[in-house]
Structures are given as C-alpha cells and as structure tokens.
Length: 194
Image (cartoon, rainbow, N blue to C red; front, side):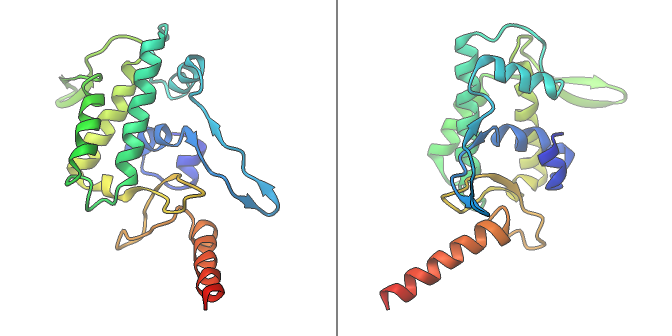
C-alpha cells in the first residue's frame, strides 16, 4: 500500500490496482500557482521493477522489453476500463475484449492454503507480481467494489480514485479541486455566451 492509497483511504484489497493505474500521472493543471508536472513511474523497465519490488510483488527477475510492453498495455487497458462509467463497463465490448487480451498474459492458479483457497500467479517470471493486480480486479468485480474505482472526470486530471460516497456517484477525485475547477469553467462558459 502506497502513501497515496493510504491518504485517500483506498481499501487494502484494491491498493495495488489503484497504485498501478495511477503510475501514469497525466494531471496538467496549476494549483496555487504551481504547475503540476506529468510523470510516469513506469517509464523504464527499471521503474517497473522498482514499483513491483516496493510492493513486494517482484521476483527480482529481468524484465525484458516484451515484458515491459505487456505491463504498459495492461496498465492502459485497466485505465481505459476504469475511465468508463461503471454502469457501462460490462456493456462496452471493445473495452472488455481489450482487457481480456491483456489479462490472458497473467494466468492464475487456485491454491489451497491455510484451510482456504486463494489465487496465485501461474507465471514465475519478473511480471508474476502484476497478477496481483488482476486478482484484485477480479475480486473487486465479484464483490462490487470495482464500481467504486473510477477515473476523475476532469480532463486536466485523469487520476483514478476510490469513490467513498454513500451513493457512489462522485465524478472527481477531489471535489474541492477538480470539481471546483470544472464547475467554475462551466459557469464562466455559460455566462460568457449569454
């Protein structure tokens, strides 16, 4: 669990998925006079290896260029899926096919352990740790919490956030920032055209 997932009270069972989706930071706004710098924690294979190791998901093996590309494609598919409105995700066949293609690279095996069953990566290479992200996504879809993981509706942000509101209808990661900017922009546009 990262500082960000703790700060925004993301449930532990979704922390790796949340953190993985947010390794790409596309925010491009100015806050208190400071321009937010865009970044990508996974800009290199070494960055991916460090991200996996930090979360104790890595085997320490070498990440090949093909493996690195697969990881970036998985992240892209996850972000595209989370960008879609939760009520439309399962209806969007294009998103479903793209996510299916990517999750096939991360097969899982069921394992009996400590009187229960768990899923573990069937891969045994440097990317095996990303299977934990796939498991979290599957479990969250099964128990309904995946619908609370969304992408901020602000085009200047695009951060993934966990919607803790009771009706699960939040649109922005932080209403006081992204929501306020969007509402102010809409207000100005409406009054400028009047």
